[in-house]
Structures are given as structure tokens and as C-alpha cells.
Image (cartoon, rainbow, N blue to C red; front, side, top):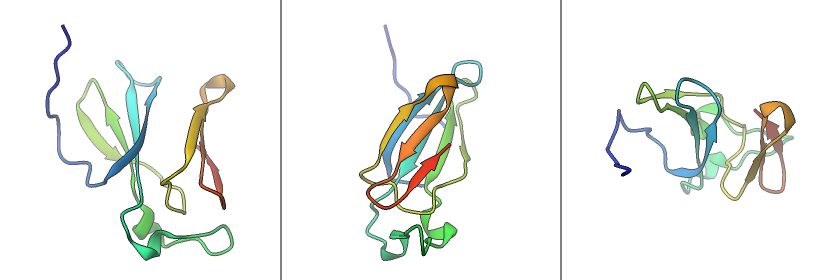
Length: 102
């Protein structure tokens, strides 16, 4: 039977999207935050947001039960789409104005 538990420190973000990554002993979960009503997060391709304002990506290591910072796109990822590509790459399609591949 499955169990749930509160693990590790707070991710310090409002998680909007998550995906299980095929990495580590038991996998990792990439978590994206966004839409936190911060006008500074509304970066565009021609005028990226300040990285501090959009640093809302974390990696949760299932085996170690730790949360670490990861690189973040330069725009808010709220309302984005994501999928895995061939070869194991993860594609994040940002809403309307930008694209990022991680």
C-alpha cells in the first residue's frame, strides 16, 4: 500500500507543473512555479525578466528526499506545456511568447 509523507525543506515556490525525470536511483521530479502575481515575472524574449524574479524551478530527488535549485526559464512558466522528447530530453513550451528546452 502506498504511503505519503512530508519530506525535506520547503521548495519555496508555488508548484504549478511537475514531471518525473528518469534520473537518480528512484527518479527526480522537476517542479516549476509561476503565476505568483509578480509583475516582474512577465519577461519576454526581447526583454527577459530578472532571473531572481523567475527563479521558480526546483528538482526533488526521490531517493535522497532533497530539493535543489535548478536553472529557470527567463519568463513565468504558468500556463505552459511540457513533454518528453526522444532521447530523454524534456521540452517546456512557455505560454505564447517564449520556448525553452531543458
